[in-house]
Length: 282
Image (cartoon, rainbow, N blue to C red; front, side, top):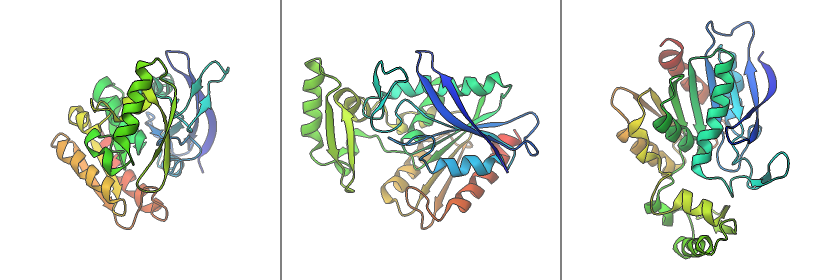
């Protein structure tokens, strides 16, 4: 059974983030190999499907961390109450600093072989991270149902997007970047974004689109999605087409939706087998 410990890391710009670490003393690899798991939009380290995989992959010998980004929950408060955080306010560039902090945490413990695993928005974050940072300790990337942050696809996700985006631009120009917009998604759910965050993630410059970043990843990448999430399943295939030849693997999970409920063991087995070949043995 895996040990469990609440951990924290501080970013270079002073944000303290929490997480949970799993490891199995009897099975831990020598030298140790780590996995850092990054949650999706408005989730957190204790409310994400990734926690199941982190706990069970620890029994394969990995030291695993499920981390909070500063985009955890829709709206949260910095530890000392100095500022608001959360998915409504984060910028994609913030996630680079967030991942730096937890990767540094593991590196300080002597780990020099680490895999990044992200779900939904977290998958877009780990793809962008390794594309830009090319961190030496990161030897593998796993994308679980990567979010499609594409300006061209905005009408496939949100109602009245262009009108709301225009209002967000006006708010930023009026120096009111933290004004909150409520976006109704076509799947019936609701998102909340500040004007600045809405433009950052979904604006016409497409800066957060993983298709722009995946082709720059030079380590092995595994792309996973559920066949029941048809739009993201198609997007996963587009990412596969853009990724470097010889570095990429793709799996569709039959019957699985965005959260893989009822398919956790199958997902874990795919991850475990792939990691053994592409991280553990490298």
